[in-house]
Length: 486
Image 1: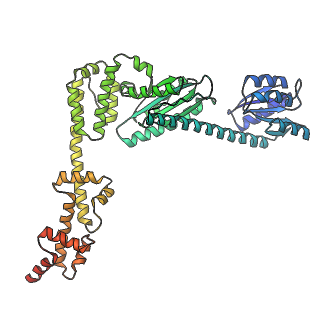
Image 2: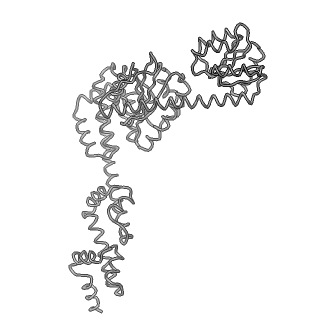
Image 3: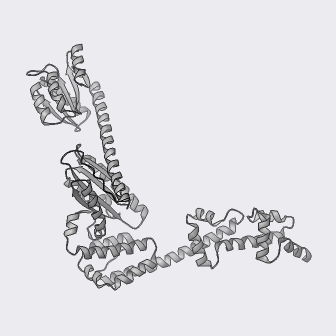
């Protein structure tokens, strides 16, 4: 905080400064005034969060000086310092909006109580104001995205500027990507708290499309553009992180620039890791349309690979192999950044200076993914069959199996039929019917109802009907045939 000490006694000024430094080393910026007139002059030039003022000062008394300053210093906390513990001074101090009335010599414990109270209140106001700004900006973006209508939001003060930064984290695993985004959010917030002036505002939130968005209302902060470079050691080898920024004069321009940033986002693939580019640099760069077309194809291909849509990936590869424009553009871009993106997202080391060689490597990875997916499906089918054999008497509906294995019933149905050639429900029926026949033959003391319950059927009637359809005879006939053999 900025603090002003107004007192004509040098010893008091030095003593108060020493106390503040002892209590809060390096936390506050402290100025001093030797009399009332100097206090009025300094307070007229600079805003002070806290002013300590003596009542009896030469040229102008502390309370007279306060009366002159008060209209121009809304938000300043005033603390009267005096050796005169008289009621009339206190009464006038209160009428002028003085917050605290401290007697000399100062008690360091009383000073700490007062300063801690002011700090808590200041932080509370700051956090409340910040949260209001975050809510206002994120809700305005969401509303504009949803309705397509851009609402004008005026700057909170005349002459304010806006800046917008979008951050992308590109890596293979969704859990790792979310972890990096969370760290990025925390580091960026901490960094901004250190460099931002109190008069400016910022908001960090995630867009509906998933990118991390930073908005600043105030002056342009050049140090934000170097944030990723400053924190390079914290993110090295974890993912490819890039950012694009733009300035704006009002919310309408800000939102339109956000749309432009998103449209240009595929080109981030060609940017160096842990860098921030301006939208103007990208728009004015050579071959921007060709670069965007190439990067869009690569981004779509990567999305197909990550979601195991190998059919879609193969189709895209075929299109890319036959497109001479893509090959020509590939030969003119920064392939090192492109290969870094692909290596991070595809979880492998890709090295190729030639377009056809790179596509060949990607095709091999897709084929490996197809085979791995086939093995996973085969293994999943085996696990399901083993589970049914051991738990046929329990709830083994496809919904229950889906919940147990963490996959959708429709996926189980499709994969099971694909790998076994039969429907899942038919397999369950087969297991239960064979087990029911064993019980009817080997445990004649059991009733048909008891057999039905032991193989997972609640209704004896439904069990008997299913049994007859499966074996072409009723449960009692099976038991009768066995009794005849005995």
